[in-house]
Amino acid sequence: AIVQPQTTVALSSTPVTKLAKATTVQIDRDESDIVLTAETANAEDLLVQAGEKYDRKDYKGAIELYTTAIKINSNDAIAYVGRGLARYRLADLPGAIADYTIAIKINPKDAIAYNNRGLARYDAGDNQAAIADYNQAIKINPKYALAFYNRGLAQYKLGKLPEAIADYKQALEINPNYDDAYYNRGLAYYDLGDNQAAIADYNQALRINPNAADAYYNRGLARYDLGDNQAAIDDYTSALKINPNDADTYYNRGLARYKLKDLQGAIADYNQAIKINPNTADAYIRLGLAHYDLGNNQAAIADYNQAIKINPKDALAYYNRAIARNDLKDHQGAIADYNQAIKLNSNYASAYIGRGVARFNLGDHKGAIADYNQALKINPNDALTYYNRGVAYSALGDKQKAIEDYNQAIKINPNDAEAYYNRGNAHSALGDKQAAIADYNQAIKINPNYAPAYGNRGNARYDLGDKQAAIEDYTQVIKIDPKDALAYSNRGLTRYDLGDQLGAIADLQKAAKLFQEQGKIDDYKQILQLIKKLQQ
Image (cartoon, rainbow, N blue to C red; front, top):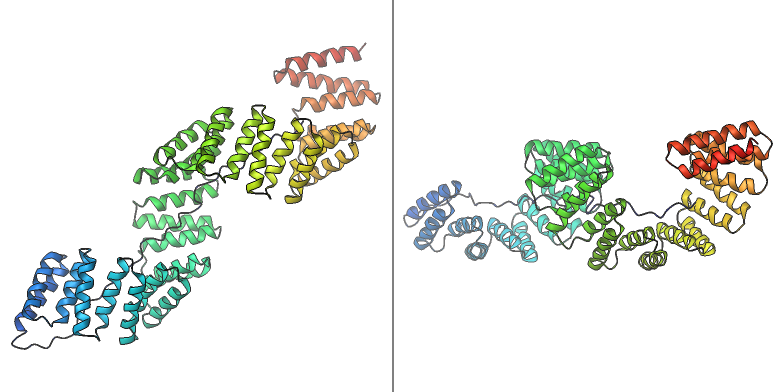
């Protein structure tokens, strides 16, 4: 017997939500002393009132007062900066930029105006212009930690991670308790793949601000990537205590729990993520994987249905639903899903493999081979595809081509016990019992509890006349699986050949009992007839 073809384990859509929480952006208000004159006294009162309205978040009211102050004194840079701030808060970025530009024209040495215009340009997506403004602010005030920090944000947005890290470092040298600088430097280190450095920065951010949910969350991501799933869970749990309504945190805690085989815990987290955000297809896919691993294929299919409803173009959802359908013997339904996955992603090698398995299960061995061929065009170094194609060639009776494919599978993955086992079967079918035994030996070396390998090695040894060794192999099968009726039957027949009639009949009687218990009535009757014949 050959080991059946295999599908790859259902894959998750995203092993981790690689989303850093929204970075903290900061603005600065000019609080420098104002020299009062008779002309500006009234304007100064308006600035004070406008500032009070700003602090109460009455930004429209603040704008009105700043505008009045500007009418009184059109050269008041502070009024333009203040109005720019209020406009920024109302998301009027062009208006804010215009005000900061006038303030800079009035006072070219106003570092705060440059910083704030840079922030407005940053929010408008013009990171290069923002950096130019931060450069000017830093040139005017080389100790301006906020400008270094904000320039770091813009560098990060442009993908200039080392430059961003350098800016955050400079901000921290000026202000060692700058928690946001630690936090965002941690994000940059994380994106560079330096999880340890990221964790160190998140630690510092949390030391300064123990209530920073985002720092716990992102430290959890870094710990997850390092394989420290329990520590990641602890961080996500801390984040949820601070912010209990964050779907991403529940989702990622579910990922970590899934890694620790806490499937029920993972399911609870995915459900909570879905409750908060019902339109997250990834959470439904992950929920489906957990249900699948629990053996609940129907629930998994229902989850994948929801994912597809949310995102009909998610190839992974179709792929995973196909695997569940295949397990339920709905091979046609599985093929339909694999077709859809391939339609959405023509380079989806795993979908070709899965469809090949479904076609194999329907007896379409040539169709299976065609799919495996396509998968190998996409990924020529996949051991599983060679293995599965070998199974299909063997089923078609082409044992030599099967052996060639098993050779390739073993070359790529020398620890694949099943590839050795199946190659042994092919060698045996071609009459090369010694080569078969060598392969079974290797399969057993990799997996000492591989009962079928012992059984077939016993058969090969029997065929070569080494019947005592065959008995030893059948005995080993029985030790591993005491309910293997065929092993008792084979050992019984071999014992009879060696003249041990009592031992033979005892084994055959045991085989008959097991066949009967397993509902294999034809085998049961055949063994009874054999016992009767031996007893004559």
